[in-house]
Length: 165
Image (cartoon, helix red, strand yellow):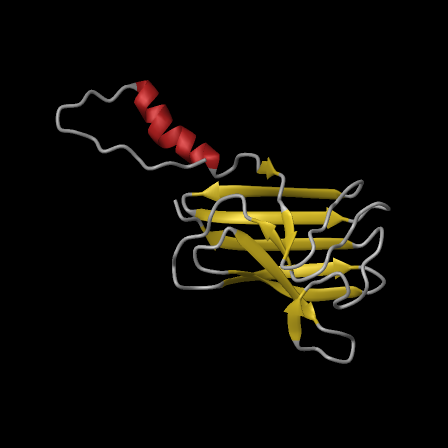
């Protein structure tokens, strides 16, 4: 992960170790592996539980830019709860006064393309999809919107945002 560069002082002796740390290691971090994390799935109503499904996340932080993916697949014992769904971010979003948009996809009986919203200073991300096949206005994914979720349903989120630090 990239970090703030050092402030050099007049007369300081530049060593190979310092050059490696300040230049090589910073440069290499742009090409490093993504960091895995386990997102927390929450709702505005009754809590869901992934049970025997899978919920994974990964991200790469370059400076204060965060690139993130979240993938969820419901299992046969997953409970979907009620209310609007959201997932935890790997690092808090900056207080920028802006909402960042990414992409979401729900694969259930049908395939539903949507958007992601990361609000200013957020610690969670919400996914929006069409309300139904006949009502294409966007709203949060829920246990029944845009379709009733069941075992095997997948939710995929991809987005980029500015980290708080």
